[in-house]
Image 1 (cartoon, rainbow, N blue to C red):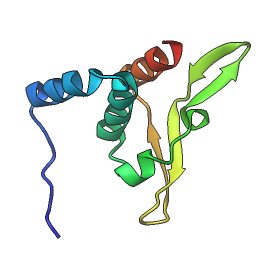
Image 2 (spheres, rainbow, N blue to C red; image 1 turned 60 degrees about the horizontal axis):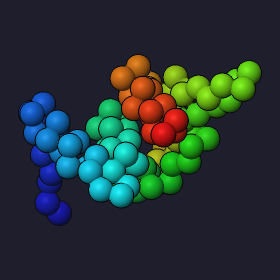
Image 3 (tube, one colour; image 1 turned 180 degrees about the horizontal axis):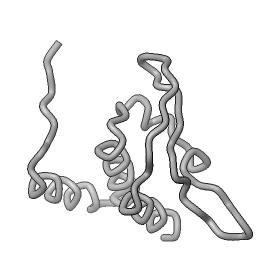
Length: 97
């Protein structure tokens, strides 16, 4: 099996985000990419995500949860990761558009 090196260069990450943000499903792709690089979940786990996994409605307002908790598909482990303020903004922008 080939190993994959993470993208560590901020310029490369920003370029990837710009490419992903274009097109018909650009904003959705950008959100999935952002969640992936901020949480280290595998794509197989990200495909299972639902809005209810990251959002809650409180007093008629949509709020992004502080943590994303899910059972990883490959390992069957339960995992919970913090959702940063920056990532919360990306998710909220997507939902409000």
